[in-house]
Image (cartoon, helix red, strand yellow):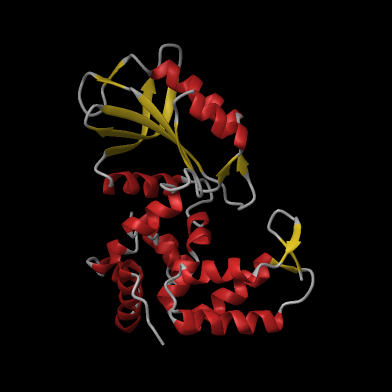
Length: 280
């Protein structure tokens, strides 16, 4: 059975790969086997992976909103656009959970020119700038020009005293974070230049997907009990993580959600952040 990927490439359908992604949602083996059986009975030669994803998402939602929300993670990250402003806030929160102090959207003076910096991090002796490369389309890859450009900005900023957390901060390192992937040349150049790089699947172990699941950093855009408009309103209120709703239901009232729906949203957010596995 041939399927068409997001990139347009035609490949063999791999049921085990789909099963693995469904299990990552927290759904039970029984539920996943049932979903896989339904999908395999309905797919056809030439179907797109996007269509398969929609089928899987719909079937998971019937089993559990929170499992569908977790399965929807990558698409939910892409909803932190279109310009990537909310993605920067999201990544700042990720670093906060790892013990960093963060500031976002700063303007810093370099040796030659002024630079707009997405995030500045500080922990122990490390003071780093972070460049966030957000892509609204799943098939866009950050190529070697990205780390080359960011390295030039870092070189212009380093070794200069900056007024950030103190009056004499000196930037010592830099990060590149993307919601998609890096090309092999981009990774090679970044490693050679001692840059920190984080993408959906890089590094192999401590990648973006792994950090999100480990720290339960699911964005509000994951939630299936909210409309797109409601998610946008929460982001504007600086409610970025699903976990932030659990102890802050007032933000849901502020955007006009009824008490009954608030209960459903909080329930989904709570289950998602605990990743409860509903065995059946």
